[in-house]
Image (cartoon, rainbow, N blue to C red; front, side):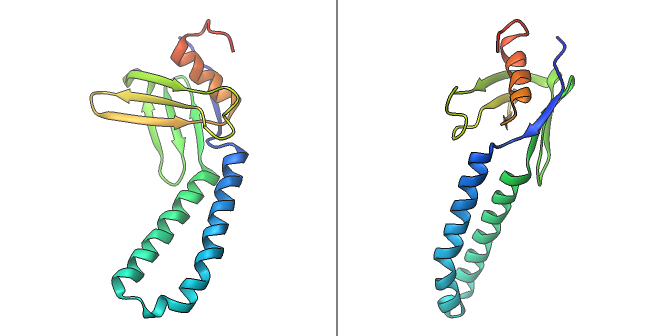
Length: 143
């Protein structure tokens, strides 16, 4: 089966906007506490707060910059960390897509390669979703 090559953003603008609002709200509500009391916290609490801030920042950056793609040989997601799977190695797949709600529930292709490796490839691009649909349901399936 010949699949169309496509690449596009992993998350739609609505998810990026929601993530931005949440991160801004977290910073605005947490900044006064950090400025006032951070020096009085113990080292463990300071390290925990710093680690949480790093995780939030990395997750936010991933939402903003990640791209999902498919070509004739592989599925890939490019962000801060790249993940990919060769189509020939896929043993099971499931397309999760709720029409009309893709602005908040991002469509995704969940694949299993081998016995233990399961990967999720969210996509916000219509061409990537069409290629995922062809891979999951066959080339004759309508849009």
